Amino acid sequence: SARILTCLQALADQCGTRAAIQIVVNNTTDDTAVRARGFANQTGLPIHVQSLRLTQGQGVGAARACGATTALHTYPGLKHILTTDADCIVAPDWLERTLAHLAEVDAVCGRVTPMPGESAGLAQMDMALATLEGRYRALVLAFYAANAPEMASAADHHGEAAGASLGLRAESYLSVEGFRDLTTGEDRD
Image (cartoon, rainbow, N blue to C red; front, side):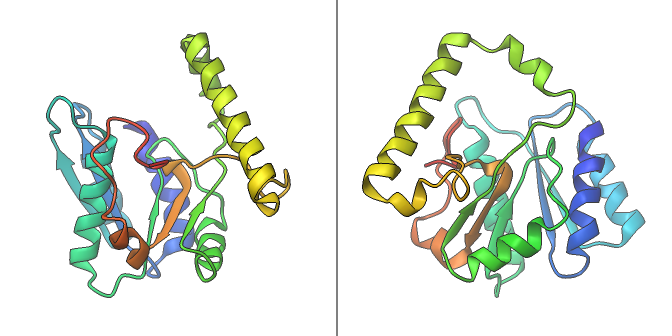
């Protein structure tokens, strides 16, 4: 719950009244929702907080889809859906740069850099799975290099599609019927 305020401040600094913030708090027992509502009251920013209890077998895909659905219903003229995670701090120009890219493309996947101190948790990962993910990423980049060379430039492409920095045109989101209810990987899907 401590991370949500840092995340919200980074969003608030650039969103102001240009963007509404939809927060989906799922299956937590901490005070994340309370802190987020307090931040909204303190700043007067348009922040809507939903608390969900997902059933076993449901995952972040269901939570992300719920947030997108609520935003689309709340703001019928919504043109873009941008997502990040509570443990992320978006770049100071994240909104501006993402919207600029969305003027030309249907989806934008941004680079994600771990918060200071968070990388220590990666040491607990199953190294076999981490190795497989690294191999997968290398194969994806090799595929792009062979089939879409403009996508393989190290300067222009980082090989990631993370919900922690994802922007979509609302019409494109709806055309693919949104995020599937996947335990993980709904952003790449």
